[in-house]
Length: 152
Image (cartoon, rainbow, N blue to C red; front, side, top):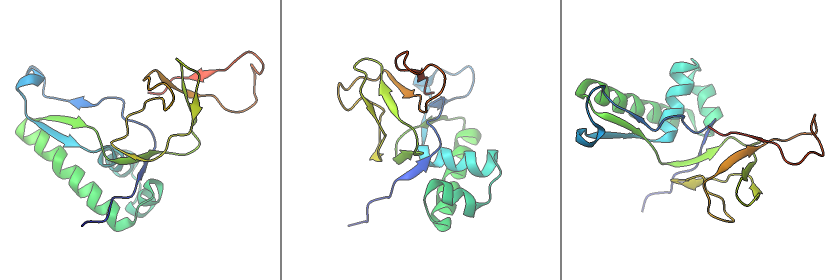
């Protein structure tokens, strides 16, 4: 039996979950599934230009694991571009970077997100999906109720 995957730390959830060729309905396209950890690896290595060692530290994985993740991500993106397939971003054992406190707008429950396989952001209390990042600190507006910042 294979060892379970460790959580990979990501900076934030991707803003979009699908990319597809223009002019072709999604219903007729084949999909290539890119994991959220692979998306984060592309962001760190290709967009931010980090070396694999530093990017691996940010994702809480070894440099060798990061190399395998980025190689797999590049292969999937190349297949989607060259063969005209839709690219779907989802899934994986991920953990949103610490220091973020989430809050449910429906029941006002606050919590720190934990690692989970195929984690979907839902309130652990009411199972609602109306989730925002709770503002932290003691700045302006103290005593005027909770302040929230939208999670993208």
